[in-house]
Image 1 (cartoon, one colour):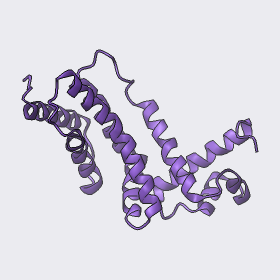
Image 2 (tube, rainbow, N blue to C red):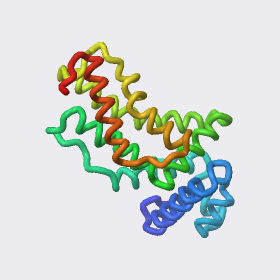
Image 3 (tube, rainbow, N blue to C red):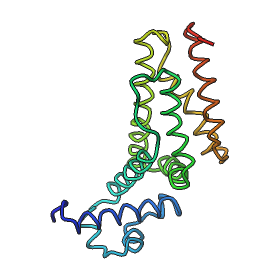
Length: 201
């Protein structure tokens, strides 16, 4: 099978879209290979030719949705952005993703399923690690430029920025208002600068 063949590309797209839809509507446990094949309108044999393992299909579907969300989010970093601007962009993308009916539901389902499945837990940890990496990069650049103190723990700062957003959406099941996310980032940046002794306000 040539993965570059247009028919193969179209089939993979249909399967990934169907998998994302199943994950969002019915959760990880309901995402069986039979259910995916039925939703995508293809045979089981065709599905298994592209994805012999359910776990890899799940990984690819999560990444597929991530690409879609990033494509509709704010543009990439501007070299002239300051610390708060960069964090508003990056954390704003997180908020946008969790406001998405699909990713908000999938993130919660993955987190629950990962408690009982080590393979899924690894997938979830990798996803979270990749999302944290960009925020860490912003914070470490600010430390190198002197905008934040070297003594600040950037890992802790990421949790301070992202944790309340996840808690509000996935634990309290409350809608995420864009204005409140923006206010949260502004206040947290002020706190980080104050902790660093570099508060500009």
